[in-house]
Length: 436
Image (spheres, rainbow, N blue to C red):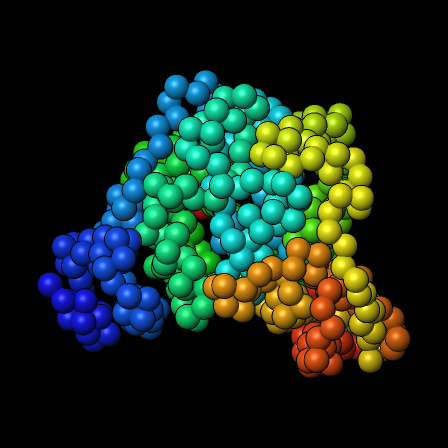
């Protein structure tokens, strides 16, 4: 069997057989296929798509490329959450300890930044000493001890996805429905959870720009999960503007602490409550969403969620004092520059993926696989959709460490991402749909 023939077949829109998909995935995992051939295969999938049968086979091959965790000896219901990615989407940072504060086991395997979106692991690593690379045994031990852990994929869990994930990030093959679905579900099927809440983003900052595509990928993933015996719930949430105010690793950790102390941006808090409530229902802790949201709010107000966050940080090698004084512990940028509006009016739209790329170019993400992230770099937004602005008002503040020759280009790109008009936009929805 030749890799060339498989790439050729997919390029020509022919359906791949089970043995061809298995060969492609297992050979790449073992290092027998070079990056350039897998990149060609991924691009062929991106352009030609996959049938339902091919997608099921791809997900199975990626799951079977490593070990499947057995968490059955850990008491409690295991519920995880996954977001398809967005700008400023640090929900998992607050969500995992919040839900775990109710006694739910939250075994969360997360990813790094992908394209214009930030990665949960990168954000956590901005906390000095925080270790996202726990072994399977340490992961299990921490779940038994405090009920929550956020880690990267272990070497033995879906190793095919780990390699492919990094390659997609730098080959313009990120926003592909079959590749996204297989990536997410191969990890989730391997990590041993009982149920999964999917937050599928839609809009200008999402990989799926249209509501139709977002619903499609949600249905595909819910179907994959249910067929594997998992309790599934997907929401379609808005990503037509960054979530919250912070975009960048340490900046989002600071915002997380504010949220768990009862503060923070309203849009972030509201989505956090909605997702946490649904996870409690999946775990059979609550049956009614409004009652569940009330319970979630109480655990934030009481400090139980912040305490669990502190415990998680300490267990994973970070200093728990980040939960009290994040500004003293987290890395700080050398430079800060206000970006001011050049127009009068009302913000009617934001090209959110462009905002994410601006943060990446300031150092908050990777342009190439080998790039080193500047954990202090990023953007704090002062204005969002619906806000009135006058010429000279501060739209946002850039944070960065290295003087950048092309800073003027980043500023121009950032300003062009805002549509400022005389007419106020209609109020935006936070959740467009749900699929169970």
